[in-house]
Image (cartoon, rainbow over all chains, first blue to last red; front, side, top):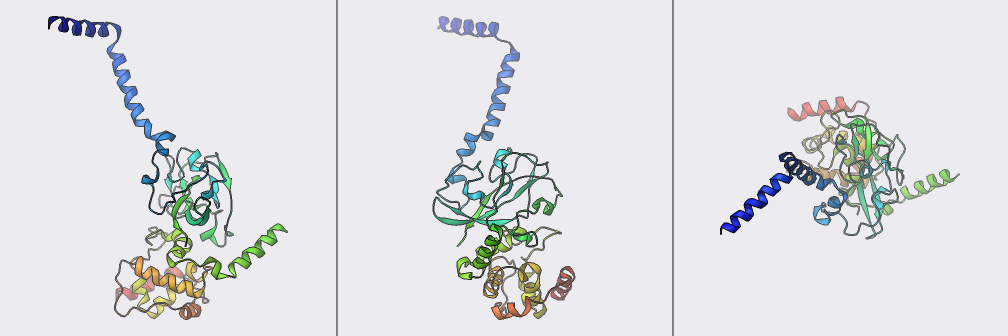
Amino acid sequence: MKWLDALAEGSARAVARRTSRRSLLAGIGALLVGVAALPLLPVARGAEGPAGQKPGAPKADPGDPSSCDYWRHCAIDGFLCGCCGGSQTTCPPGTDMSAVTWIGTCHNPGDGKDYVISYNDCCGKSSCGRCFCNRNERDTPLYRSGQSNDFNWCSGNAAANIPYHCSTARIVGVAE
Amino acid sequence: MRQATAWLLIAAASASPAALAYTPQVNFQLQCMGCHRLDGSGEEGRVPSVRSTLVPFAMLAEGREYVIRVPGVAQSTLSDEDTAALLNWMARHLSNVPLPAGFADFTAAEVARSRHQPLPAVKEARARLLESVAR
């Protein structure tokens, strides 16, 4: 068995000669950061799939959520949070979701049903400026504020996070 | 011109309630939830909760008038029938106060009677009702 000890010792010494302790620490550090960042990548969000969705979410969800033409965006007026570091249901880091919001209905071409969509704004940072969409199906004038998408819904936030950043498009349920 | 046509179309659509007949739950989502939130709890200091007040208010004559006359209810695009059904659904599904034995459902006629009387001082009216309920 001596030859095995010699082999192990030899290879360990060879590694020690070639590498520094600092490089080992750097490697471990990179691994930790990489693991932490993995859920932020689009591939991880795509992997959430139907299991991660709320009940009432459609099985058929055609189209590109980063496009204004995507069916859930039929009544959106603002920047898509998916282009701003968040997603169509979550706010980007550093912003809070407005508690009050404007609600509309959109037709899902995938299953032919109408869905109630809640366009919660994300608030607390200046306008995102990317992926601006303005589609106004069933939008009402400001004097009917409850169904108007021109209103800054961030002004209803308890935290007074008034600056508007971007908009989400969350499914509430089937409109029936 | 195109805008005028669009308005006419919208007017035509809203004149036919059958085309937009939703369940009371969906009407709540479309007409109320934006501010009162999915469970009716509202936003502290900004949007009143309906959870502990709707049913006690509905047990008082002036309370029933109040919930029909608040701007969001009185000015909604819902018919009197749909509004009554919505209030009755809310009393059964969003209230954290169980329905008392004497609870009477809201009716379309009741909604029609009160919704056209503006309620200028909503906060004050609510405060008075809360006192009446507490007594």
